[in-house]
Every structure is written in structure tokens, then in C-alpha cells.
Image 1 (cartoon, helix red, strand yellow):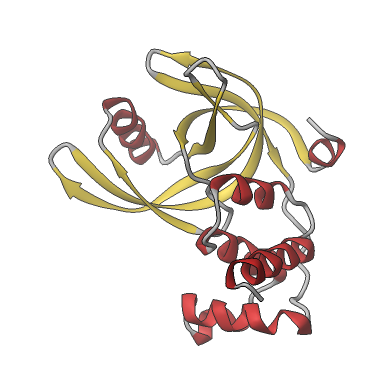
Image 2: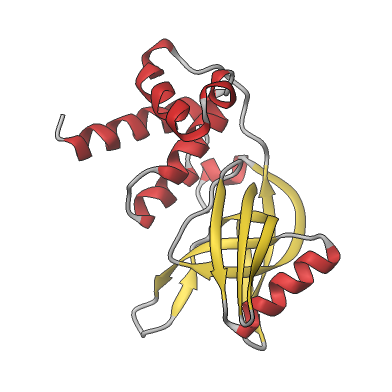
Length: 194
């Protein structure tokens, strides 16, 4: 764990189940998921019954053919669900980021001891972020995008960004909302060839 991560962590330890994916969830952003593996169906059912969240973590290969979670993920809360027999469609909203202290399998489900990160400071978007404001209006609508602070704007944009999971994980690790917006702007420029 680097110094930047350590400085942003609240000290209480919590144990949560992990949903291991090749995707990144950002706080304040929404993601739709199809759930069909029995271990995750059970986890989601428990989450709905007891009104508790679960962690979503990007996985990476250890080199021996097995995957393990990145050390930083996001707590997810289910905000909508539906589906058909054997497949559950859920929409989750990102809550707080966390650092994994240790993790293990209980049966087929990964469980982790985590420390939650402190919330980012609320700062306004800058004038030079007008290009990103236009994208936010397309994503959220004019009214919803109007008064977003830099942290919320960056998290929503990072979720929608056409970037690799590893690039998104790098954005998740940032502590400065203005730096995140700047990185998103550079990633979009690079992709457009500007």
C-alpha cells in the first residue's frame, strides 16, 4: 500500500464479500451486471435480504492461471434488479472505495477484510473542464449534470470512459478529483487523435 492510499483510509476494518470482475466500479456511478454463477446469485440474494453491499474488484492474473483482486475496489449497493430464471440483472451504484487488507475464499466466494477510504473533497469543476461538462450533459441530461462537483463528475465520466480496465483502475486510485478530470481529458484526447 502506498502512502497516498494509507492517508485516505478510515481505520475501521470490515469484512465483505467480493464480486471479482474484469471491470471497475466508481463511487457515485451506476453499472448494470448479469449475475448467473450460483456463488454470486447467493451473494446478491443475501445483499438484497439484509440490505448490505458487496465489493467489486478488478481481477488480474497471478501468472499461474489464477486470478486475484486488485488491492483497491468499490463497495456496491444494488439499486434495481430483475431478470429471468437462473439469470439476475442488477444495477449497482458505487459507494465507497476500499483497500483490501487480506482476502480468502469461503467456499466459492471471495471474502475480504477492508478499510474504507475517506470521501474526496468537494471542489467545483474548473472552467477548462467545459468539454467534459458537455459529455456529462449527454450522459446525464442537462439538469442532472448542471451542478456536479469535480469528484462526482470525474467518477461518472471515468465509469463511462472507453478505456481499458487497467486505465480505469488507475483513475480509481487517484485522490485528487481535479487530477482525475485532467487524466480523463488526456485519455479522451489520445483516443480521438487530438
